[in-house]
Length: 418
RNA sequence: GGGGAGGUGGCUGAGUGGUCGAAAGCGCCCGCCUGCUAAGUGGGUAGGGGGUUUACGCUCCCUCGAGGGUUCGAAUCCCUCCCUUCCCGCCA
Image: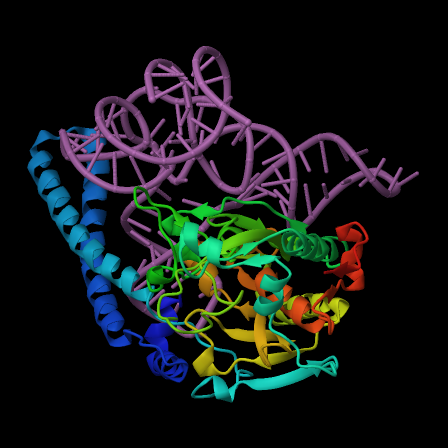
């Protein structure tokens, strides 16, 4: 959510930013409602002030002749206030549909083709044979099962078996260990179901409800990412600014309806209704947030490096950035079987956009007025696709898979999946 | 699922119809005092919004879990919901 004050003062700037992001922004409606609301509010408050003063007088004198006047003032202020409230409510609802601005460093672009490759790491391996896809290898080795998953849940679900399941679990533990022991994150475990308020806090609602799964009989959603519970974890709180940044890491399953993705990535372990992820979330202050985005991105990259997976880092352009992000990097791992890069992490800075929605504030120092926090998140990494990248990059000519060194301790010393 | 208790500022916790945005304590801030530390001592210290102001500020309104209601007037009385906690039941 953007501050109303900003929209009032610089409506054109907000409109322009929305346009470059390819988002609609109901700025004119917001401005009209804002003017209406303030006019009615002033009227209501003036009447209320008169009533309060007279009521105070009445409390002392008990002058019964004042009662009708008091009653009338009360009714009038209540009626005006109700009108004002009605506008304010509409205004607040609309504000949830105004997209975030973006940082000046974000490349302006029209499509994903305008994203900028910032750096590439690792050598793409020369196999000396035609590398196979992870789903080909996975089914041959009997460590991935798409058919049976579809039988019990439908398409876009997958199952892992034996060494496949263990490989994913090893990756989870490896990632959690690196982030908690070396990068200063605190491991969390939160509910995987969250209410609508939490979804609004991270801006998954009201605009993107069709991307998530909701329980039919109550106000609960399956988390589309651990970003939702973690970013909202301190929602409504006033944090001690001296204790920022807060760094959380959490493993969770994620559920997404993938509405609108029909036909995309239908094969393999790539785009599923349920996948696993190790998520990094930071809650920080204004001054440090840009820098904290950089370090979070580096933290996620570190996992790819240790696993020896070639990858590249993209600066997302305005058009590819999304409604709530202020600045965003994608990490893409090279998958030689698929002959393409797969997004394994998306690291974003939201500024105070989410914090305003979640009412997440901090006091910079004792006595200072509260400010909205800045929030950052990124995968560290998405498990599903990291499994793919490991399988494809570490495959051998005979169809077996060499286990990357750092994972072996987590697999009881296992060196090869065959 | 059944029954009891409770949700008040950064925290603990008083307050049962007006003079209460709210005692006291802790914490924090500013001063005084004290070789240092600790202690003592005086004062200050909730959040949000509107108007006005270059600004400091001034002023008004709202907020005691959320939303309704009663009343001239609600932290206080009534209703609904949410949450916490205790006892019973069930259970991994």
